[in-house]
Length: 206
Image (cartoon, rainbow, N blue to C red):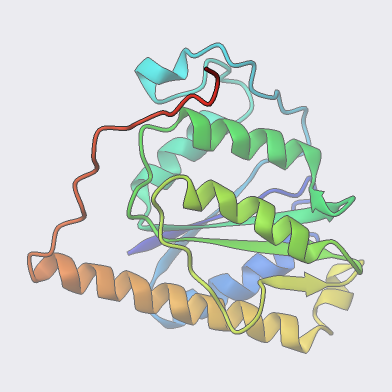
């Protein structure tokens, strides 16, 4: 089994990376393979609602890693997305990135997802809520921990002093490993993922 860890910070080895690394180390203890993907520090386009992804499952813009990330999620059994907090929400670049990933994809249904956020002081809960909505609109089981999945600190060294936050990351990894094993056991027992109904879109304009 493999879990994709997506670092939504422009800093390759900053606070978000430190949190994801703690998740990664714990997943390895369960024998789960991981891959770390970082969105980088180059400009990220926002969605322009062109609709081209509807027929391809990929975004029309190909230069900023969104399509690579979509493919990596499809190849993985679970995904953890991490983001730094800017003004009590996810950093603008990673918000634009994840908007396009989750809008363009064919389906990530049944893949467990988890969110990790890092902040200096405040805004973690709001960002945690924001990012989890990508999973709950995509029929993806949400993996929880012993507390909301956040670490605090202004530098990686400070994050390493957040012992409760790091423990929360390890518990998250334990729960992800457990759920992945449960899903695999269900498959072996012949339990299929629910067949979705035909989508109904209600218009409130009359």
